[in-house]
Length: 158
Image 1 (cartoon, rainbow, N blue to C red):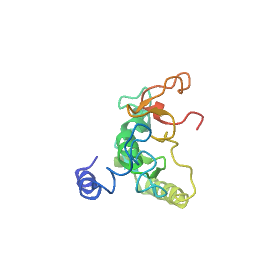
Image 2 (image 1 turned 45 degrees about the horizontal axis):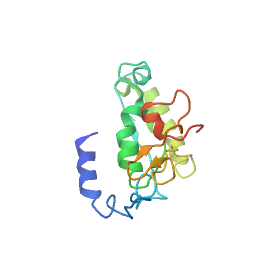
Image 3 (image 1 turned 180 degrees about the vertical axis):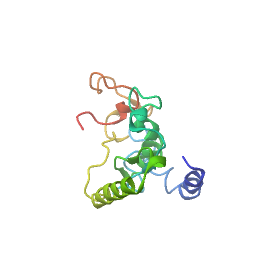
Image 4 (image 1 turned 90 degrees about the horizontal axis):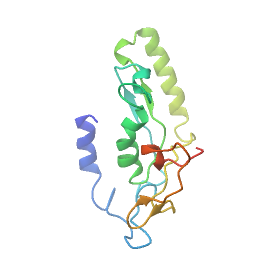
């Protein structure tokens, strides 16, 4: 992530606000991953890349864009409770001419209109029954066939 964003997170995400809240016991492990201080608030990343969209796919050289953004979407935004919307990604931004710029701004305007109504990424809640507590390991057999890696932390069928 850009250094300015990392610095903001380090200053704003303070102990007792974004982390270190809630009960920690054998049946509950804090208020985080869907249950934190920011529960009920929404967040959405707007990301630009120089690479082509194909570069950020399962077989693309960079891997899936959702995997690359997982540490921010899940580990920084979902952790303190935000409902995280799918990111708005602009590929090949360095090649955008005036016409493409109009298309991008129009698409972004449309996405922002749904900021309060679009469905968030359905991440599994930490204390929602899918993880063993206190180990925080996903319970066996919950995943769908072919579901692996970071996708395990998204509820199937969503």
